[in-house]
Image (cartoon, rainbow, N blue to C red):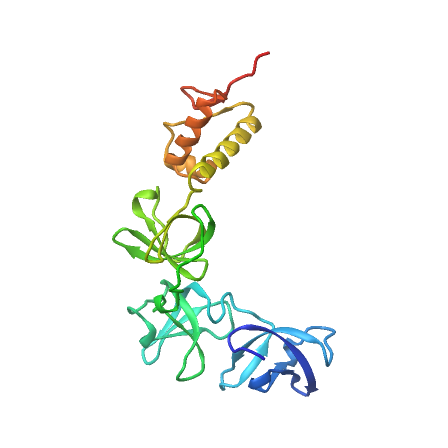
Length: 281
């Protein structure tokens, strides 16, 4: 069975003057044009292809794959707007992705980066995008543990911080007061589960949670100190930007890690930053 808007592994059933025909199951035989046929492929072989529609609305196969597929959430740039039907998005595919006006929560502009869900339009049976993403997020309570690492897609701003799509499935929230920089809509980054709410939503953190956060960061600081000869021009008075550039973490987390190392008597604080405490016999 082949699925429109997705990458499929399909069997070559016959060739023709125009290319190879693939077994698309309920979609029938699907043409893979000659220019798209990988070298050495023969009848009976399986080929990984993306299934879409061409300019004449025929279902076709291609070895060229976009950066997102049907059922994916993605941040895409608006490259043009047709005043009659909607906006077109760059999904790194020869045929641009349509974002119909009826699927826009607000009008989008050329050059804007928007978070969308890719879907099959029920009326036209074509691949389209929608910014009405929440209806496609899983409503079941996520089965995570506090501290689990997840992939975050920044969806939009909220009065409390940022609404986030977690692991392409769930809704989550990053609180403004937990961040040391502004985030970009459409940005993808690693995060962690900070709290599991009763309503099924997830409170998130950009830092490892609890003891695991401090332990991981202290190990990184120690390794950096050893690589730098035992001293580092960063300390609890350093700027958040310098700390983020060096360790990819917030100043709050960095100070907690320094406090742990100081209590363990493995570092000392200096006017310049920190340095290793030399071991004595």
